[in-house]
Length: 292
Figure (cartoon, rainbow, N blue to C red):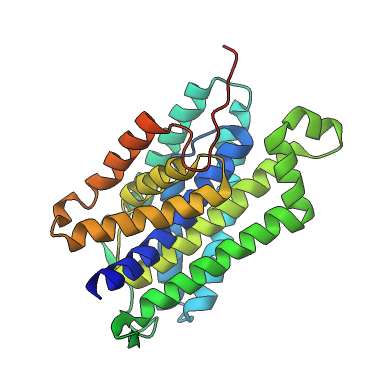
C-alpha cells in the first residue's frame, strides 16, 4: 500500500515534469533548439501565480490562466528577441544564447525583487485526504494530476485538430516545404514557443501550490529534470515527453521511498546517462541515419 501511495505521488510530480518537458520537446521538434531558458519561464509562471493569488486575491484557476497568458507572451518575446536573429546560425551559437537568456532571466528577477524565497498560501487547494482501496492519498496530488492530464489532452487536441497544430506538424517535418505551401513559419515557431511557455507557466503555479516555497533559482533543477524527461521519452516527440515526465517522477518517488532520498536529484541524471548509452533516441524515438 505504501508503494501504491508513492507511485501516485510520483505520477503527480512527474506530471509537473511532463508539462515542462513538453515545451522542450515542442521547440526542439520545430527548430532543433534546446531552450535552456525554459526552466526559468517555469519560475516566472510560479511568481506570476503567487502574486495573482496574494496581491490580486484571485483563486487558483484565475491565477493559473493569468500565469499561462503571461508566460506565453514571455516565451514569444524570448523567441523574437533572442532566437529569431539566430535562425540560420550554428546550433552552438543558439545553445550559448539559450544559456545566456536563462542567466539573464534568473538574475534579472533577483535584481528586481531580491533573492528571498516566497511561500504560497496553504489554502489555495483543498488539503483533505482521500482513501482509495484502503490507501490514503492527498487530494492535492489527485487535483494536480487531473489538471496536468487535462492540459496534456488539450495540447494533443491543439496539435492534431487545429489549424495551428497542423502548421506546427508541417514545419516540424519540413520547414522549407511548409513555407512553399503558404505556411507562415515564423508565426508557427512563435506559436510553438507560446504554447510550450504557457504549459511551463501552468507547471510553475502547480509546483508552487504543491511545494509551497518558490525562489528565483527554482527553475534550474526542475528544468534540467524536465530536459531529462524529454530525452527519456524521445526529444521532439510529444507523447514521449509526457511518458518520460511521468516515469521520471515515479522513479524519483520510489528512490525516496527506499530510503535513498539524497539520491533523489541525482537519479535523474543517472537515467540520462543510461538512456544516452543504451537508447539515445529515447523510448519513443527511432534511430535515423544522417549524412554528415
